[in-house]
Image (spheres, rainbow, N blue to C red):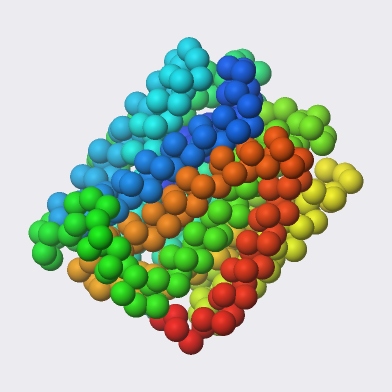
Length: 386
């Protein structure tokens, strides 16, 4: 019986993000064990994103040229190897180098997104993009919980388990994942981050605007992501385990929304209407979170952030994939993902700097302002989107 390509790519993304989700919640505590400040933690996350920014167009363009499957296999295996290096790091700089390599191989989401675009039509594109969001969401349900629970046995233990999940993902993809397009069907795409690729992506408003909005959205989200562990440690006395549970709760909401509901919402209201609603959800929630006097109220604001993020990300991906030329979709989606990666270059050091110098709540206030700007931009540019 022929397997659904969407189901297969869902599992590929899920296992990829499960490994990622295990590591991210414990990274603040892990780096602190090496004496890192919040600013140094920001750079530890930023180097990952710098390499994603540089390599996402490369992997997307390469997948246009040789096919999605070999690119996904190579990057999954490489990512598993970097997890081993992360677990065995003896000091901050070895950990930094491991995250550098992890960013190179972690830039494969553009290829997974292109795979979804290959196997869906325009009517079902938002639902298909929700598959990636659901993989993210479920990865952040189980990943942080696993990482938090196992962190009591030492930070290396959950990271090595993440490496094991990466290897299982490689084996699964090797035996089950089929190619979604005929390699070489179109003219070879740009094989690196290039001016030609940028011109292609920014040549029309229907792709340029979502890239800009994705940048703003990610820049805002990274403010919370970077300081989350340190914030809940200072405000509620929460360690890696409790922080993992909170992030897992956000993952539950995101997976529910993006795993099925987003498709129905997009058909009823359209992606262009969902964007400002999602941005406003995040803006209000990010404003309220620092003032939460209890864990329950803080969790309610995290729920709002997860809802907003679940509306925004698949809607932006869907709009870009619809507007991109079919034979250059991987390249354009690579530039789109690089918009997010660029925000993750700027965002983490900025969040760490604000946390150290302006107070623990200041990164979330900046996030709120950025989300308000994105909401206004999404409302004013609806006619220029696909």
